[in-house]
Image (cartoon, rainbow over all chains, first blue to last red; front, side, top):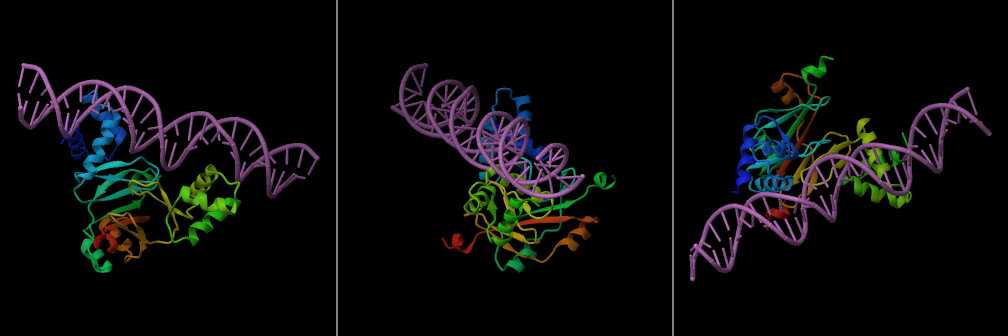
Length: 119
Length: 119
DNA sequence: TGTTATAATTAGAATAATTCTAAAACAAAG
DNA sequence: CTTTGTTTTAGAATTATTCTAATTATAACA
């Protein structure tokens, strides 16, 4: 694995945020001022291919990159705040309904976060 | 609702596909040769805002637009084929786990379609 | 060590998707 | 008819991302 790929993987695994490629680039740049955007994109793609991170596509926002450990996402419809949550695993349930093996699933749950609800 | 908005809404509601803005534009153009891409984007955004359609963001593909009626999506990891499926409604289940009201959820299930599995 | 091969990185152009801007066309209301 | 507001247009602009070709770094080995 390439030098930058390791650093990027570490950044993603250590961050609680769901960073865009741009944010990852800026963060990496602090430690490695010579790095360039294309490198970040290349490595992000490679890491996705290798199954070490996953890409999250979310409406009206650039793609975000996330650790691979299985979890779901909770999103505020109003302010867009995105957080991790662990709902009970649905794999078996979904397989029963589908009647076939599933590889994975992606669950986003929309609600109003306390802050936005309070207004 | 604007002229084109109605036509676009109808196209989406009548199609079984999950069309990109580009595909909708091309389809609409057949009936309305003067229409222009920006108009399609404007109207798609307006329709989303009004809650009449929904936008689907899927990794490595432009956004797609879909009817609003609640359903889930089944996606082949290999060929990317996207189809609708109705899994049992999870709202109550998720609300129990979350302890709060949810507005909606978006569930994508990945598997290998029979064609790709067969290879 | 010098030579060759391979992989990683860079700079910057190119592309794709989408949005913006300002003007033109259209529609409705007085 | 005018005025006012909305919709549509053309095309430029922006954003996110990928591509290309050159450059640099790394490793393999004669």
